[in-house]
Amino acid sequence: MDRISTSLAQQLGINTILLQQASLNETQQQISLGKRILKPSDDPAGSVRLLDLDQSISRIDQFQENVDYAKNRLSLSEGTLQSVTNSLQRVRELAVQGFNATNSASDKAAIAAEVYQRLDEIVALANSKDASGDYLYAGFKTQTQPFTGSAQTGVFEYQGDQGQRFLNIGENRTITDGNSGAEIFANISDGAGGVESAFASIYNLAKDLEANGTSATTHLAQLDRILGNVLDVRSQLGARLNVLDSQDETNQSLKLNIQTTKSEIEDLDIAEAISRFNVQIASLEAAQQAFLRVQNLSLFNQM
Image (tube, rainbow, N blue to C red; front, side, top):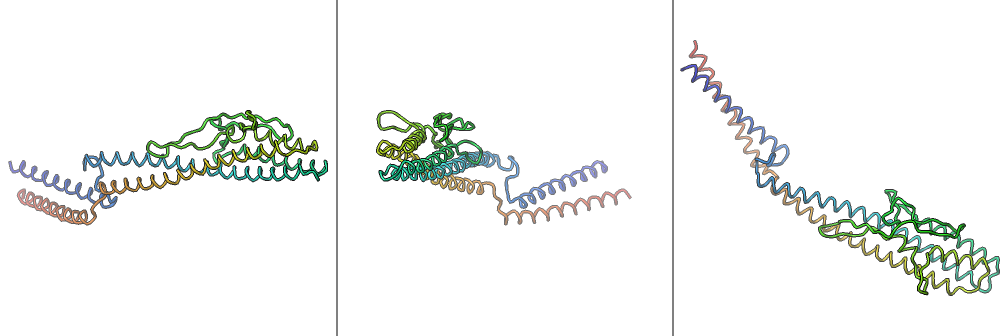
């Protein structure tokens, strides 16, 4: 019986020490990480809440990725269309200058040569790509060059489509990341119930100058329609960029609130934890000393 009692006492002593060590290790880990919940069993309800909050943060992070992507793409598009606007305004200046009655045929041919250069410049801008290598103005067909043709051929075709991608930028909120080339450059009203591409209009203007034409009125009116259309699209882009800035602030604020709530649930009370740690150290030392005393008594009884 003495041997059984001694063995039991030793086992109880070891179990007590192991439990104290486990508690001490857990508190030490909590202090190291600054978190009070290390595993679901520490706080089942809190752990479920934390999982929901983490999922909300993940959603916001995805929204923010879309916001950043749309901002970059729309900003690039706006800058590109600013360059298009500048080129169109120069073409208009050339048209006014070229159709002046004081110009000779050779003067007009020289002016037409610059119009052709500006035309190729605008076509190149209409075929711009974003940082990912996707065409800005091809609709859904982002890997297809939207426009073919040049001042040399005089034949221009749109190879994209009129699709617009919508991105989720917040809960129940989407935004389109661009406008199709057809909307901006291809389907421009000709003032007579039909449509004509901006490129064809500029090409025809240059051809008339080369032919020593004298009437600027059909051409200037069409250039104004082209410019007006581009400016309308730029206005849309500006409005979307404003929406993105606003949504960016909303997402950041919401994420901060969620992170604050998450912190309140999982963050450790450092002062309390250190106090508990010190108590656990003392308890472990006491358990170890008690075990040694039991060991010593057992050895004495065996002598």
